[in-house]
Length: 120
Length: 375
Image (cartoon, rainbow over all chains, first blue to last red; front, side, top):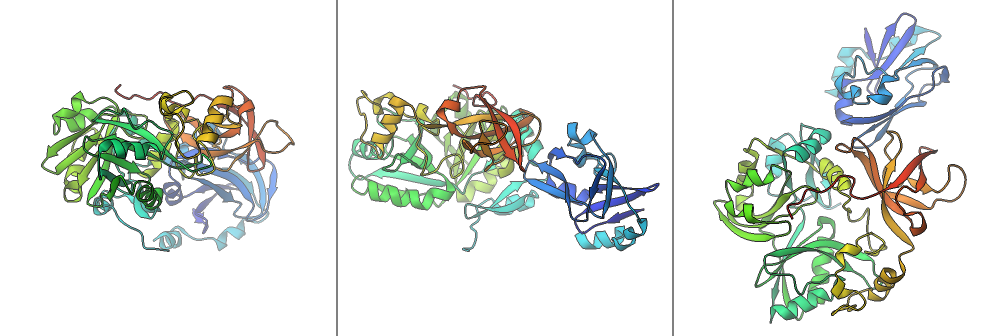
């Protein structure tokens, strides 16, 4: 099951990890992505930290850490193939995986229906 | 803020699914559903149609002789106007007394008048400037009843020649008048993408019809301002207000090629334009700084405002990026900026500071991609 943030990120639980990416809507709004700068794995982050930089043909945008936790894995494929973000934003183009103390914090985020209402 | 103006093609842009944004006082299409990257590549591979109706179209009609008009217009620019044959267009630059660039423009000799196209953001000032400087020699007539389209790319000639056969005989920078069902067209073989192509001035009433007729050709897609920017950047062409402004001379902007021999030291009509002392001295001694091409290493774009350094750590900035982004045809980030002339040689290693990190960038030749004009 996917959860969504107001910053147009999706969160998916995978075992004891949370996988983070951006929504189809966000990818469309960004336009063609040409560069992705990923964080180092094994980085502790706090909610709202700027952890990923995405550059599209139009502008640079940040992806913020949606929750407190540790980034344990990043998707290196995006460094060489930033265009994946447009091709498969909710699948192959995940950005990083986080380890959280308590997965129940995800309950506070939007469901798919709630997110779809947000983007109208 | 004043209300945004619309070009004659506004409804067509909306119908085509364009995303409209404010630009130079107009609501203009920044992209269509195809997206910036694909639009860019489509224009390079086939043909793109651009609405450039926000730009200023001006007729300079002689009050007395054409010679007096030509002399007056030449006194506004370090560029030769005399000697431009009828049916030909040239690139020009209005300069101020310090040698700075007021605007860049295209002007054409159309026999009994000159036709001038200026940047949208500068047109009000440019028209006032021309009225002041040419008061004795010309009527300055803004053409508010005409739209302007650009058709660019290797398929451009094929897309328009079925309608207007005469374009096939045109070379780069030729201008013609052509009659069509859309009204009298003023066509130049030019553009601002580095591609072969045409700019077509059409009466307002015929603009949508002409645009639709061109779009009906299978090779032609509508292209927005987003791709227009990456196309001109790859072609090494300046965007006014970014790569040049009143604080930069044509020599510093690496536009010395636009200053013909006749206007230089020792030429027939040397000097006699605003800022001649500064510009001629820079031509003789070299400018202190120069606009150069910049190729960032890696994939991170270096955009306008990125500061340039001559070392990986410490030191003060030596220059600044004035245009930068991703070049879809180059398949890499590209930029232009100003650096001291001592650091302007091709392959000079520099560093650009992006998000607090100094990333390597190399001075590169312009254009980033060879132009394909039909000479």
